[in-house]
Amino acid sequence: RKEVEQDPGPFNVPEGATVAFNCTYSNSASQSFFWYRQDCRKEPKLLMSVYSSGNEDGRFTAQLNRASQYISLLIRDSKLSDSATYLCVSEGYSSASKIIFGSGTRLSIRP
Amino acid sequence: ETGVTQSPTHLIKTRGQQVTLRCSSQSGHNTVSWYQQALGQGPQFIFQYYREEENGRGNFPPRFSGLQFPNYSSELNVNALELDDSALYLCASSLPTGGRANVLTFGAGSRLTVL
Image (cartoon, rainbow over all chains, first blue to last red; front, side, top):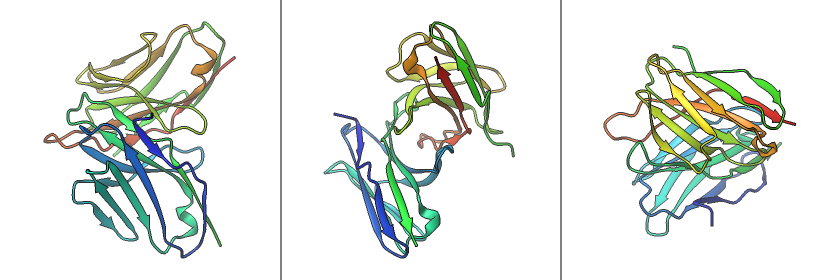
């Protein structure tokens, strides 16, 4: 079983739709979580950090459920420019802990 | 403020050869980590350097090694290249503060093809 698992998609949704992704992690000691966005043939870029209470940034909402060991990303009013691969990341407590990426969820927004 | 720069951007090697990839961290960042990203996969953590010492390592064999220099730039060395080493190699820099987790700033990557 992978330490961080994501539905690979692709999710193909119309512009303006709401779309949600889940990501599960197996290491209960994981402390910090992030969502990164990666455009085709580009490097990953931080989308959001996800802390214990979850957080919201404009159209994007990230939540953490420690009991069930998953994090989620919700995108409201999706735009064509949201088309990308979304990577879920978990990290242990210390800087020496592994930084684990999921395989990514591909999202395609159609006009 | 300069971002993370990597070189070379593309390179082709043959099996058994050795390769060195280079990374300059973002100004002010003291921590560098390296990742291998195969096509269609997420980045896989290779190792992390902080103050010139390796302080975390993923499941990669010893033929993957690295260095960090006093100016926080870094190198990734891979010996005895294998076909499966073909991938995008990403470098990321960060500045951990107060025990908070690393927010990573990635370079554009070095795409390695092993023939």
